[in-house]
Structure formats: C-alpha cells, structure tokens
Length: 377
Ligand code: SF4
Image 1 (cartoon, rainbow, N blue to C red):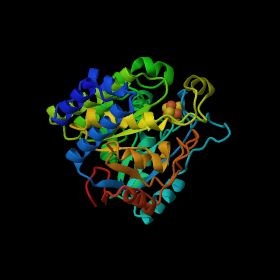
Image 2 (tube, protein in one colour):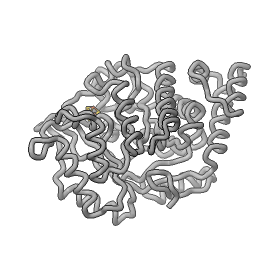
Image 3 (cartoon, protein in one colour):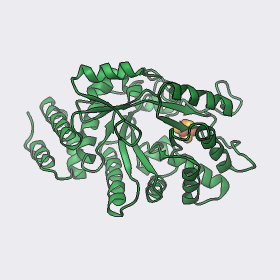
Image 4 (cartoon, rainbow, N blue to C red):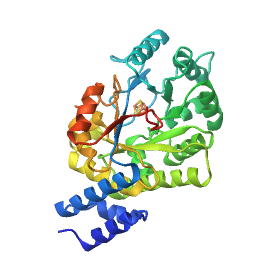
C-alpha cells in the first residue's frame, strides 16, 4: 500500500516543488511495490513534463588513451602499472586512426579520458601532453565535439605542473576541448571516497573544478557511481550537491552548466577483491538502480533535465527499462568501452545505431539523434 507520506511527497513534486533531501531518503527507502510503482510513475510524468517523450541518442566514440594510472581506486579493474600485463598507452597514430574511423561512422563526439600516467609529458609538462592529445583530434577534425578529461585529470595536470585549475581548463578549452565529463564523482561524500578512492580528489575539489569549468564556459556532465558501500543518505547528499552546483551556475549566470545526469551502477566482477567482497555481488541490482534512477529524476529534473542510463552497466534491456523510470536519453554508440568491460560488465562495448533505435522503438517513444549538448541533429 502506498503510504500517505509517499503520496504527499509525490503530489508536492508534481506541483513543481523541489524534493527535499529528507523526502528523497524516504523515497529511496521504500520497499513496498505499490510505493515504488508510484515513484516510477511520478518520475515518468516529470520526465514527460520536463523534456517530453522523445528519447535522444548520440553517435560517439570513447577513447581511453592509457590505462596506466598512479592511483588505486578500490573499484577499478581498468588501471595497470607501467610494464604490467595488459598495460597500454596509445600512440598518436593509433588515436588518430580511431578518430578517423569514428568520423567515417558519423560520430559527432569523441569522449576521451585515461589513467593518470605520471610519464605522460611533453617537454617535461603534463599539460603539454594533454594539449597534444587535443591537437591530435582537432587538427584534422576541428568540428568534432571533444568531450574530454575529468575533474580528476584536470587536478592531476594542475598538481604535476603546479598550475591553477582555471589555467588548465582555459588552456584545454582554447586548444579545442568542448566539454568536460563529470566522471570521477563516484559518490560525493568524503567518508565513501576514503574507502572507494582514497587517492582521488575529495568532494570539495570535484565541485570546485566543475564549477570553475562552468564559470569558464565549459559545459560538464554529472555522474554517480551507485550500488556499492554508500547509504541512501549519501546518495541523496550526492544529488543535493549536484543540484546546488547547477543552481549556482544558473543563479550566477555562468556561461555553462551541467548538461545531463548519468547513473553508473557499480559492476564488481573483476574489481579488486576487498571491495568486491564487501559489496558481495558482481553485477548491479537492477531494481535498486531503477528506483535510484526515478528518485534522481524527481530530485534533479527541475534543474538538470536530461537523464541517461548506462547500457554498459545495466545491459541494453536494463537501460531501456530505465527510460520508463525517468530517463530521456539512451546514451551513445561508444564504439569501444574498456573501463567497465574490464570490470566484468555484461552490457558490451559497442552499440550500433540500429540497436539503440530498436530499443527506443520497443517502448513506443519517438527517437532523435542529438549532439553532446542535447541539440537535435
Ligand atoms: S578509476 Fe581512474 S583514477 Fe582510479 S585507478 Fe582507475 S583509472 Fe586510475
């Protein structure tokens, strides 16, 4: 039976009120099937009101230029030490070949991120190496949208070269970076981060770098790694930080803001043993991911209207189901995916456009090709 509390909360958000953190936790803790169904219906209605019925998708390619990384995040099956079996570092020609192939397959976006490789320098500078990566993509394909380098990579460059974040972001933007992936957010809670990714930037630094990007005219996405050691309160705390970051960008009239929210449920199959043991399962629990998807739409939708599930983490069937729980975008073709695949994800590494389109058609919603900034193509 749907409780009065849940009914009252859902009525209030349907009238346009922002969901409070306390009420967000109430929604996330529901176990009653009737209450969960009501939350799904509300998220779906809000999605309809906020962005309509159209499901968007993008033709893009992921390029992870190296998996050599100085850090040791406890969920990461992608990283390697230099010289370790499976370690790789792409040459410029290999990157260009991948970009050229993506363009031939009508990609409008290259998403480029990599491990934090201490030797990745040109003339002794980390920033020069990253600028070279940008040039490799942009010199031949200046119109391609380059969605590149997480807040963690920005901090890595700044730390290695002794620069301000604003200097790094400006230099990357001027070289041709068009937007910043909001990855490395994991859960924006320092208690969780101490266990999950102790060497990574803390919550405040992530927020500072993303806000600086907005101020400097660089749009970002936003993400959350869910379903491991975090509590419902910490999940809502994360959403609250994203909402207030977006509110700041809007209130301060920054030239850029958060373009979308992507939920990334934890895949633990190949994750380092200690975290895997602690979480106690290999694949995400779809029901938990869907409830959080719905609550994220309810919590953020007034300010961040685009929500994308991860077909890599949930499989295409799970991601298609998420379109009924508040999502309005099915994501991209990716063409290659290493980070989650090396973690044991079942979703695959590449999606053909036709496959994404049939997934959208299966729920009888219209489809639309988009660019990175959600403009229709
Ligand atoms: S998640 Fe990123 S920063 Fe952490 S170990 Fe893996 S590659 Fe390195």
